[in-house]
Image 1 (cartoon, rainbow, N blue to C red):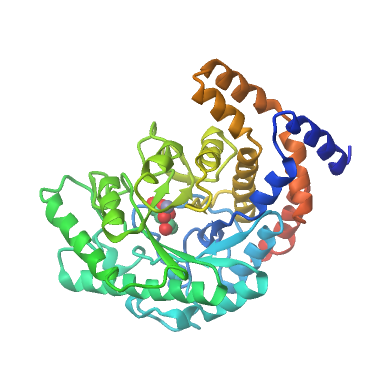
Image 2: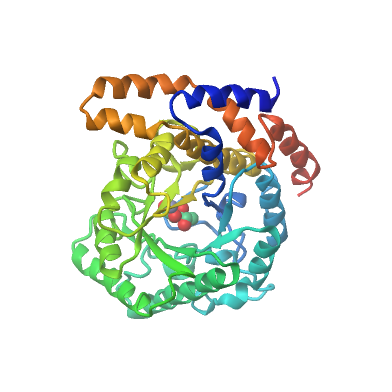
Length: 417
Ligand code: RNT
Ligand code: ZN
């Protein structure tokens, strides 16, 4: 059956539930998703590509063909983008700067190191987001950066935090869409500390300095990302969830909810409406933790759908900035981008096709029986037909056709690296 014919049938079936399939596809197409550049090279960056990835995060696997240069990374992302429907932003990290081979200290990075990225993003029609990089550096070797007890080390990282805001502001101004600037620091202790309060006070003071200047929020907005633990920082994470809730409230910033940064039975899907009761917006780092914050490629699982449906059900479309954060080096990295991003798109489409009004009416009337009955019935509606039609309308590969294309690129381009 042709994609269009299948769509016609799906239209009829969804209409019975009061769902407008065409409106659903349109709304998803307009929702920006921020795809992380660091999947392309195992978070290596171009500052010191052969150095170690530190900060308690890890990319495992050594599948051949990873991007080694700026040009390779851009080409790989462009190739992956052909398989990903919807509006795309690319999230950069400071270590992906274009310094033309020169060594630039983190506290000396500025917009001038990202002009080629902006030029490229304009050409390709991508938005850009940003992250200061507080890891993989000699001055983060103690496992502490913005909360280090040495004021000179703190100063260095505060300067990096401040200059990151100007890079993000530059992205927003140039590209005409707000650039999210995400702050995550690896700071923590391997073993039990005895002055958590003092260390946290250093981190708080650093953010007071970093966020002192008011910037135009149309160009950039900052988000702060908490975490439970990192490798080598198992006993205490300075930037815990509670710390960053307060920090976001104090400075009127966004909180970043990374799906791998909570205890395994906690769900980010449940946190969205909780946090948005008091904060203006959130940033998501959609990832897939397997037993720990392992950053596996995002799959189309219950929690991914729950996150997307929560956004829709709460009417939070404008207050949730969706970003991806996973890095798998054990399989083709372009496939990782494609699989994870396509799944995020699928989940958004899934949510857009949910008969929310009907379900919420059952709940309001106390008819929890119908709520559950329908939640289960709709799971077997012809979602795949709408997904294929959405991909076709977006001019990206329909069904499994992208897999052969990806394999060809692997043979012809990646294997030559
Ligand atoms: C680390 C955080 C952080 C990083 C990226 C590379 O646990 O999730 O967001 O993954 O900044
Ligand atoms: Zn993250």
